[in-house]
Amino acid sequence: EVIKVETLINAIQNALNNLATPIDVLTITANGEPTLYPHLLELIQSIKPFLKGVKTLILSNGSLFYEPKVQQALKEFDIVKFSLDAIDLKAFERVDKPYSKDINKILEGISCFSQIYQGQLVAEVLLIKGVNDSANNLKLIAAFLKKINIARVDLSTIDRPSSFKAPKLSEDELLKCSLFFEGLCVSLPKRSTAQAKKLISCGIDELLALISRR
Image (cartoon, rainbow, N blue to C red):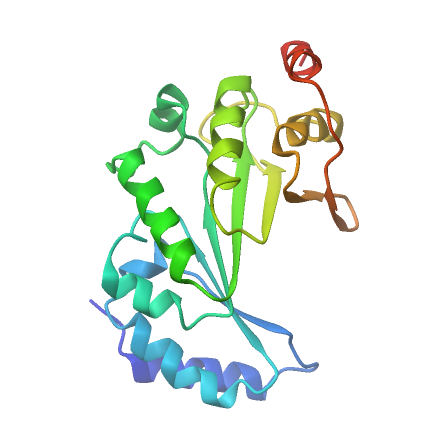
């Protein structure tokens, strides 16, 4: 059953009216993929008028960015954050197994949307030790992101038990993985804060050696 737009709007308005302190960003997400919601465009256009001074953000897996209807809705958001955890075929099949989508079609959709979007486009890369943190996968993701109009890369690892039963990357290992994204603005999680910075240069041989020692 599809939830009516009016129901969501009322819920959002009630929540905003009962806030103890103002918010900077309103995030749209779902128990699943929010771009599957058939009334997404109507929803975002309906709530923006009463969100004075509040930015809108949507969290998506990016799998439907190639659809014109989805693109039209996404363009209404101030910030669009999509996940891209794997491009390497083996890693993609493990990480994104629930989504029977062609990775090339997903990448084409993200690339196409990045050319028409005027807001802040953010990529989220969630790394799982021994699953999608290989040098090959990191190189493929970084190469793709460097070709599109992207504002920031949020690089992180799992912080709770997952179906892969794999340990999370340490802060040091995550920092080493971030070196593949040289030239991009990368945000790394910290216990109390997140830092974004331009990455320093690092030779590919050194990079591969660092990854091989994880």
